[in-house]
Each structure stands twice: as C-alpha cells, then as structure tokens.
Length: 132
Image 1 (cartoon, one colour):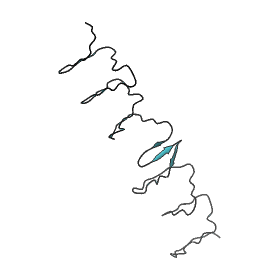
Image 2 (cartoon, helix red, strand yellow; image 1 turned 60 degrees about the horizontal axis):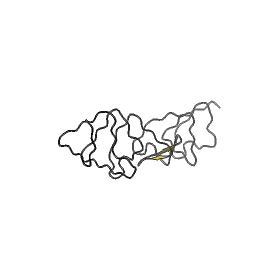
Image 3 (tube, helix red, strand yellow; image 1 turned 180 degrees about the vertical axis):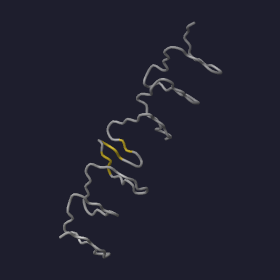
Image 4 (cartoon, helix red, strand yellow; image 1 turned 30 degrees about the vertical axis):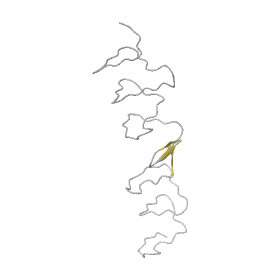
C-alpha cells in the first residue's frame, strides 16, 4: 500500500525495493547510525574519510589533477621529490638514466664507451690490463 508519513520508524530490519529517495533538497541532512552496505553501485561526488581517515582497498584508483599521498607525489606521469630505494634498495630498468651533480655508484660496468678524464685507483691502487 502507499501512504504519506510525517515520521516513519521501524524496529528491526526494513527492506525497500525499487528506487528509494531520501531527502529532497541539497540542504537536507540524512543521518545513518550504524553501518551502511552498498552493493552493485558506486559512490559519486562524496568525500570519504573527511572527518576520520581510514584505509581502503580498491581494484582501480583514479585521481584527476594532482594526487598527493603521504609518501609520494605522482602527477602527469612524474614522481616528484621522492627518494626511491632510500630504505630498501631494489632494481630498476630505464631507457635513459641521467644525473645532475655527482653520481656515486657502488660498482660500474661501462660497455660500448670510453672512460675519459677519470683517475683510476686514486684512493685504492689496483692492477690494470691495457691493449695500448
């Protein structure tokens, strides 16, 4: 049946089928005490964790503009002002590697080029084998 109510309350579980509209203006406040389950839908135009931050698990995370996270700033495909491997070193694969200033490498393997203007053995003398 249908009806118009000033106040509607239910004890126990309430089930609504079909479309449900809560409120009719942007100034309406809808308060939910307890937990909310959203199934087979999306949450649009809603800030999540604005008052109390929490964790989330997402299959896809998209951000428009600049996304600043507590440990990394990624925008436009660039990772800015972020040290990579500071606490736990790992490997990297690059098409081009460039450095400004001094580059300190624990071991160097240079192929297909010459080492010019470099003192070899300046701090620790070693042996060398040369063709010319």
